[in-house]
Image (cartoon, rainbow, N blue to C red; front, side, top):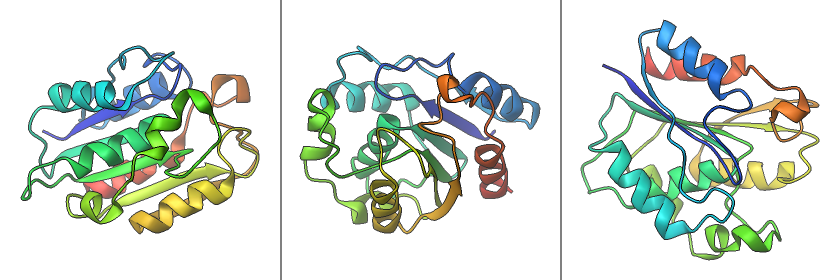
Length: 184
């Protein structure tokens, strides 16, 4: 069975924004969906998040997919770096993702620790980056930089801010479409 892990961002929860909608749509399309509450989301730590995700995801395979939002994106990419040499996942959809400096002190360790995109790409060759032209936290340039590092297909959605419920984003059809295409 195809499994999807929905990984929220800083101060996030698995039951906010567009995650509930995407979860229902994926289940309706035959996916097993996992949307964990990441530990200490208000004070995230790289090692803690990676350790949690490693334990939670178990043994990934070609039928394992990840969707990350904001800080969840770099968390998933860093998780991919740590996988055993022959491990492969089916694909990753990143929403408002970044890997470089954002000048947000509370999450700086997520982007100050060196990231090796080649190690991440060794375990996944199917990345999609969805980003907005008016994100107040992640400038388009940072999403495009991350997409370039991973060789991700890019999808620009205008006027979606940081893809939060406060931005009016409670459904994200482009993420669903990207996942369904990856899994077909």
